[in-house]
Amino acid sequence: MSTGQQDDRERSDRAGECLTRVLELFERMRAAREVRLEDINGVNPRHRFSAANLVDYAAVRAQDVRDLQAELSSLGLSSLGRMESDVAQHLSAVAHTLAAVAGQEPPRLPDLDAGIIPGEDPRPGPLTLARNTVRLLGQAPEDRDTRIMVTMPSEAADDPALVARMVGAGMDVARINCAHDGPDEWSRMIEHLRDAAAEFGRDLRIAMDLAGPKVRTGPLAPGPRVEKIKPDRDATGHVVRPARLWLGASYSDDDVPSVPVTPATWLAERTEGERIHVRDARDSGRTLRVVEAHDDGVLVEFSKTVYFATGIVLRSRDGAEAVLGELPETEQYLRIGIGDTLRLLDSTEPVAVTDESPARIGCTLPEAFRDVREGQRVWLDDGKLGGVIRSAGPEHMDLEITHAGPAGTKLKAEKGINFPDTDLSIRSLTERDREDLRFVARHADIVNMSFVRSAQDVADLLEQLSELDATSVDVTLKIETVGGFEQLPMMLLAAMRWQDSGVMIARGDLAVETGFERMAEVQQEILWLCEAGHVPVIWATQVLQGLAKKGVPSRAEITDAAQGQRAECVMLNKGPFVVEAIQTLSSMLQRMAGHAAKKTDLMRKLRAWSEFVR
Image (tube, rainbow, N blue to C red):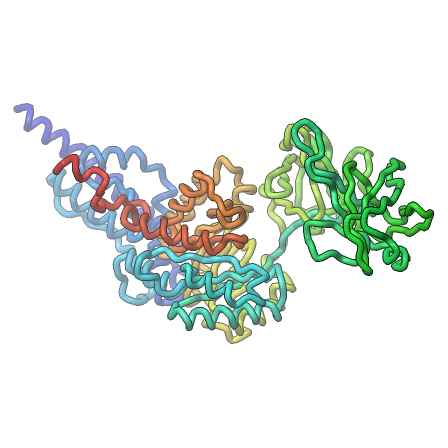
């Protein structure tokens, strides 16, 4: 046998072995469809092909096929890396090619459709996803396929010009967060949005977030009514700008703090250049110089730090006295370090901040104390502070802090708490959500469901929408927890019972729950699974955050925003420079559209090296 013949025989044998593996995958897909037959048949007929493909993909990905992928690549065949949108068709083509290479008859493939009620005629997966995206998120602009969603700031309720600039810059979906503002403000925002969409001729969609059962730290008792005001100093400690304070009613300059003073007649008697003496909250003598005198107050400046407190006496040079009125309460915080014990209390009563150990603060979710177990992790304040439960009871749980800053981490009231290892026995749809849903059903195009963790949560939302006769309102599932991520296949099948649905990767809470080191792989797995179900994905949280908030993006967030092109929509949060962020993101997505589609690199003409081959 010649070397060439031996190589052909070896290649044929390898192809036959690969074919056996592919046929095993078909059998696993058939078995998975049989298990999920009721769920597949229960979806909207328009999504039945997508539901079956979702089950196929999950069945294949439940196996480790990396060795098969490598072998297929060495044979010059598809490595299965782009099969998400139509698994059965992709594997069928691979199986027939392998049979030909192996010199075998075309394979007899299992009847995957047995028992499945026919839905709409299946179309190529990418086209199905594109159709679903248009139905959920509206028509894409001419120059890019990826939509842009933007969180509406509170100012949008009273600033139609801002809303118009956002729409004109390229916003395709407006997100209104029901956790902020109220129906009056939401109504005005929506009115401005509809007007701007008509002005620019845009297919603008309005999405509203339900707040969901956000778990937070409870209140801390306020500190003393003291306000520390200090001058600006250079690196050597010299004063470069004196501190300024307005004594009297609120001052027109927001950068200058103000404190009330009684009696008002004392203020009216002050003159420019006069010096006022005071002993501050530390009993330190200080002098304030009047730089402006008005009937309703005086502006003073000073070159030393002063601790002003309610009731402090102000004394003029002629001996006349006045008293500082009530100052705002000081916001308190705990400082927690690694190795410390933090006690979470089943209470929403304000807790006094003391030096006693353990430090204590409330938790707003009573069910947590019933569901947690020793050894489970807890994260606080977006992952800035973390610990492990060492003891738990009906009234409190003690955390051993394992993650904090080098000098400890501040923990304030109203900060988020995550229980990534705990199966919390709560429903995602709260009573407040049910009330807000009445407004959403009448005014929004999409409802975003927060902290969804099970198929039952999805069913609850769909039932509420049906009762409100809001079947035209589409649904987006926000994946923010480990539980939601793990239950995503079943939640997608539940959502497919509706007309149109999508998924938002809420990367903030999700990163805290999964661990930052796992975030990249988790968001990629969500993208793959949703592509298999032909479900549009919204890439959310901290996209171009530096640009939106400070006007200058970091290099890392530019790269991150570009990667968002793998999703069907990218979300920006609000900020003073949000219009500039929309413009920048729109430009980036236009450029990236010529380079990649999902996981496929597109070979657009590269102009940078055209001279090299000319």
